[in-house]
Length: 600
Image (cartoon, rainbow, N blue to C red):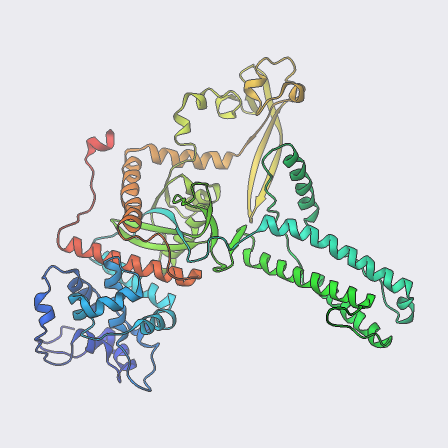
């Protein structure tokens, strides 16, 4: 239905929206709808016509703010317009301003901010309440993807091809408040020894005083934590390595303290209180007082039990996916940063920020506590499916995303992989091609391989490796006899003559992984693959360069993964509108490379 000229009633798609906020008509107030407005705003007269603030308001006028407005009550005093607050935050991020105090200052001094806020001067508490309580993660994502859909309608993005990359941004956490899984494991081993000693003292106390018969009490049995034997083994190895001035081994075995272990200690404490009451033993407090044996055992159990609960909480915070966290932001993980202020490879609490880009616009962002990129690809693709209805047709990323699990997922969903292999550069070297110990440089037969010395490696068996729910299958081939081979030093890994004199060659081949790598490598080596790799490096790494160098976004202002995600998405939303403004002003065009450049 065509609307008549001069008809100022709300469009049909916004009827529900206007009913919801009938009392406080935020949309009409901010976009000056519903009545003839004669605007003599001197601030607007001094704004250049090309200022991106006009583009911002134009874009926001096409968006639906129903979900945001529904967060406000119709009762009580009318507050600041939420659409205006959101617009101010976006415009500030367009200009690289993230500090709330700086935004408050600009609302009093900057002409564009004053025009956008219509003269309102909200203070920092208003913005913090808006960000933390009103602008939820779901609402912000809804507004972001509304804008992405708008870009798709205008032909600026197709949503069929994603260029993915990530960077580490320092968390707003103290640098020296770290908790390491390896340290907790080491201390837990000592704690369990102390608990075992106290349990023995408890049993001896019951036997010597015949309390186990008098009160019919069972003796205490020491509990066992699965995997602790492996931890103790590594501890002993590290003690020997320290004496030999060798590097320590990692001791990040994932342990779990069940609910029964602390409860056992609590039951023993209750038993000791019962004995003390039955024997009229008083617990003494303060210096110079002689404590009874039952009180000493009770207090030791209490102290050790609290430590056990503390370590249990540490393991719960870390989960099974990371080995460290910060006490001041428990969702931040310690990562190795390129910005090393002490020049000693120090780890800092940080988040892994992932972006998916097309035509300079950031389509998706994802915050991860994982130090690597392997496990971040699938969540980004899941966001594409959730918010845009289907998976993309093509994905381009660097070698940090290359894993069998990721490539299998792409193949299963008919997504073309342009992911560089981890051995992409190494494959070009002479050493790679001449390494006789690798199966890909051996002669392949139907039932095995022939090595450089002419000896056959026959099929032996299959091996299954399972890690974090994903299973890999390897075909194992072995040479029956390598005796007298003069090329063992070249063939065997880290060959030692005395130790490996009687050792035979064994190789493991993952057929599925090899096929996936070959397919992705074929795409990467094509002209289209070369073109996509250049686009990815320009647009994703260019965005991070602009983010860190030009806008100084090297550290988050907020704590917790949800607030950090909102902070990054607000920044990306603002930058996307800034790029949209440049496209509209013909200052930015879609990147196209000449055929000669691709061939080169």
